[in-house]
Image (cartoon, rainbow, N blue to C red; front, side, top):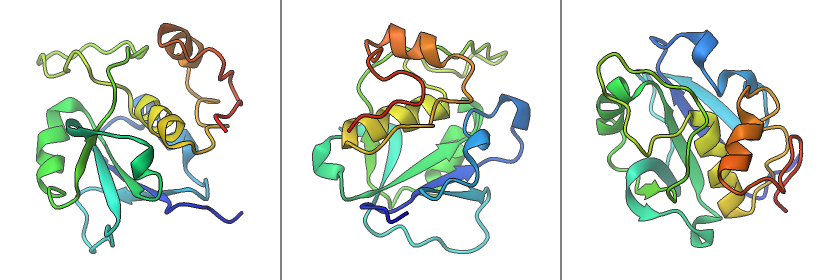
Length: 159
């Protein structure tokens, strides 16, 4: 498979419970590169944008950019984010998560998404194929329904 865009780099905090990780079932996809945090070898991220709560909203003008997704709890998000401040931040439009989060420390922002939800929404906005992204996500149908994305059935795509 030849991608028409750079692969998405997912930097995953290994302190997180793999059973709760929404993107780990996607490991092995050709369009995703998983890297453990902290990153010990430099990653070439020229031409990439970082999915974040702050920053200019992700749009079709970012279609040729690679995506950097930091995967970890919101408790670790700030720490991880500091290591990648040189990568321009892009926010996602406000949508509802379907992931039933319960932070004991109150660190989950109201607008936070599960990593797989953020990845799906980013791919959808950039016109990238979304097929298979939500296949293993337990709350996929609810996420799609909550956000009016119901036309993208499980296994469907956005192009």
